[in-house]
Amino acid sequence: MNVEMTYSSRRVLALAVFALLLGGFWIELHVLPLSRTLTGPMVPAFAGFALLLAPVWFFAFGAAETLRNVLRERWMRIAAPALLTIPYVLYGVAQHEFKWQFAIAMAVAPVVLSAVLEFAPKAQKLLWQDVVVLLALAVTLELRLLSGAWPHSGLGSLPKLYLCDVALYLYLVVRPVEGIGYSFVPRASAFAIGTREWLFFAPFAFGVGFALHFIAFYPRVHSVTQIAAGILVTFLLTAVPEEVFFRGILQNLLEPHMGRVRSLALASVLFGLSHFHKGAPFNWRYVVLATIAGIFYGRAWREKRQLLASSTTHTMVDVVWYLWFK
Image (cartoon, rainbow, N blue to C red):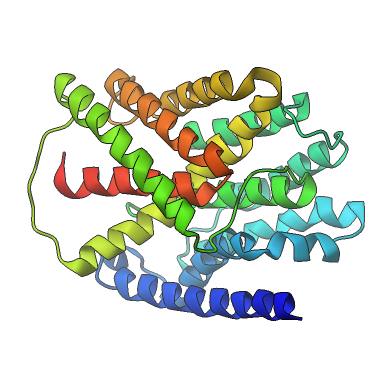
């Protein structure tokens, strides 16, 4: 009875905090230059964003298990992710930018990927079906195949958010993988481990970053509101999606084949390579720093299989860099 009450209270708290988050994003939207570039009604477009954010948030509070219990039939699990096209439809129609090719792609692609994993063995290791699915997600992101769906500056995180929704659905509902550690329930150990790995990474970040002329100190004064907004946006729209893919899924599934050390190394290298196009055709300096960072993100995740830990490290690295370096 006490466990059930705790679970229920967590769901209520998750819903309340989600409402507060949406309120904060709504206020922030109206002070950004983006609000002046969107010509259509804001409410439907913002509702699309809320629907994109909802799986990322509520899956971290146990919604995946509930959804698995609802989608008992195989065809239901395969067909359900077609609904992930709704956020784009709401945005596109409201802003008079709707394109059928994006709507169809975002409805059909996750259904196909769900079918691939639905008929795969439920082994807790990397299968060829996983390679197909992860490559499809990575190529879509790295080649920016969905960038035209949300074409305005300031909306660049939405394709990543959509792909995170797809990945979470595939690996928490269709093919549940043990040890992902996807939970936002606050744990002191997660924050302690995340902070520790950030401190371990800092000498490498500063030493290698300055040596490669990749970073430069740019002291600025920021308000508490700006810092809080930076932490929130970075955590939800950058750190969590990347940690889900590279640590919770990829490193996790590689471990049974390669062991802890080599799986950490390979996932970190792939994470680094995913940053090759940042600001240059091949930004090798970014690749080097991101690879080193990936090692510490992977260490944070694997200690207790908590994505909250690696997402904490990731967020701290990005926020400090964004606020006080260039």
